[in-house]
Image (cartoon, rainbow, N blue to C red; front, side, top):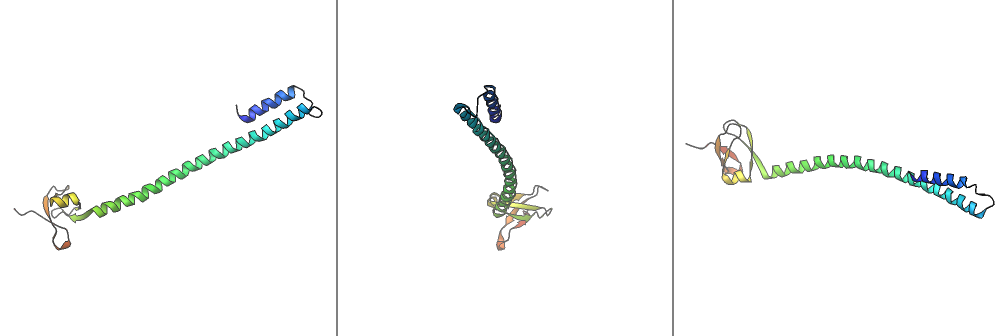
Length: 134
């Protein structure tokens, strides 16, 4: 039962008592109190409706923010990957390969496309792939 319904019930009880709201001090007091309770009930219902509407708007904004964050942080992750890796071509199949610090330290890499193993030549500050010599 909502507050407005409870106040309406209380008002009905007061009217059932046939209080003289014109001459009786107690009747006037009860009538004024019930009027105040009605206003408070309506105000609370308005606040509840506004709170629900704001909650829905916050949910929409939260979803929008999540989408923005995914785009922004995805770009940062891509930049981090670019900072930590560089691209070379496989000398056999010419497939582009990303070389990270681990592969660089090993000095050798295997192409996932054609499975050819080759050494990395770091001469001239350019990373060029060389097929191993037999």
